[in-house]
Length: 258
Image 1 (cartoon, rainbow, N blue to C red):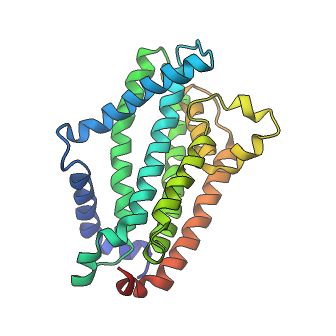
Image 2: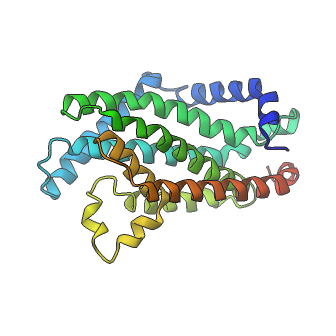
């Protein structure tokens, strides 16, 4: 399988159909459908704001926006990489019957979650305006940040999709890893409380934290930390290279394991 632009373009119809299928399946038994992608982060934001805002004595009325930015980006990362991890096994019946470039499965799993994530940003925009966090020219910084987030998710997702075929326990291990990533992404606590301590290296090692902080800078009208963005981008690109090499080397063996 060639992971080149030409190969992806040749199979763009299949990719688009897989993306549509992913969105349909995600909300197949949901009465609210895609509306839930708007309500879920909003409800989570309310709960986290009440709990952690009270515990930490936060009186800043923009604190819910701070939480929601982290919650949305982490939510996409967690859901997309988990979907990619399961993508080959989830489509085993198709893989055994019809030839479809196998790379399209983890790719579509991440892209359909990215589309849902972009829709959910409507909630962030509304909440921010209601709470007085008005958009500025800095908001355009969000574009490269979201691209880096997608690159990071693709890289890790492709690696997981390969490992998940041969090592089924990876699903459980990744769930634990995501919990650790969540607590080191400063989603529901102020990052500056740790950045000045000896534990700051834990946050800085987490590329998702870097992406979230850059996105927050765009939302709150500040210059983003270029070093953070470059670190996350480099991390994601390296993961993509490793993931594609591992995927191509092992994809012919998938049929024996699924």
